[in-house]
Image 1 (tube, one colour):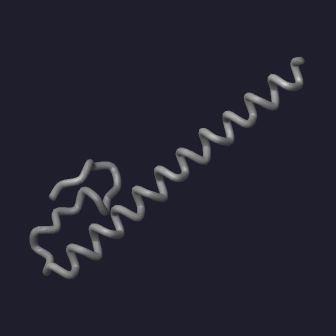
Image 2: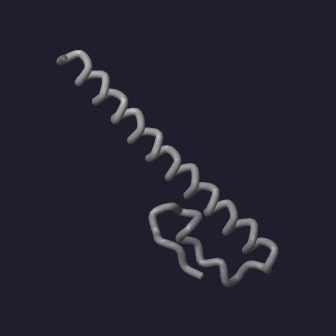
Length: 59
């Protein structure tokens, strides 16, 4: 299973690892992805709030 490159954990070739290590590494990559996506969503939410605030000030 190859995940998208970008995160060093994701781009690691896991074929040489024993099965239990593969699972741990893959779940760590998934967790890192989730945290990264969560950060992106939080930034978007923050930008939206700033925009709403600046619109209120203009009115």
